[in-house]
Length: 255
Image (tube, rainbow, N blue to C red; front, side, top):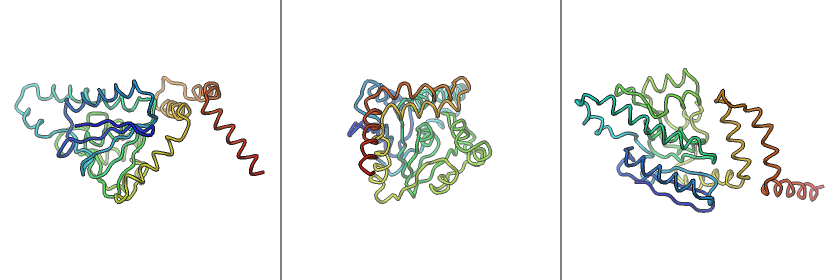
């Protein structure tokens, strides 16, 4: 269903629940356990979420929804499930480390909400993504309406969500839903090279950058204050000191 690998300071969670990586309570429980494992480990810097299948994830299991249609508490059950997935995706978003979704194939509904919970999205050239739940008379209720709107604005979010659109990767890039589109041929190598850019940066500086950027969306936080305080903490770290010293040596060498 899910697999965790930590290698070369990259933690990778692979979705592998045939046939379309459908979401379920058992799936979410397993994901929580993997995040528990990561919180106890200091051997990684970046989290990647990918799929072992031809699709990233088609989202919730529609057959489960259909089985509940006649139940008097069907709406209550669905609302409860939405809150459950929100808790998981919020946890991904709030991790101090940077997270990256590696998306190939279809990422729809809850499947794309996973990617939206990540900090960055690398998408294959043949991918199709979106939140089509309105087409079934439902909503993307695991954070999709909120995260998509923050990324691309109210009008564009309403266009895509209200129209139940699945859009190609290049259009998603133009709209600002994803950060990179890379060819499906050689996807792993191209995505891996992008991820290494962040692995090779000082961890504390990356975490401070993520915290300051996140503060812009939280009125309760003083982003400018976080910015001002960050140098006090970063100048005391070994990685920052090593990077500055290496920069000075290289600058002197070039003179």
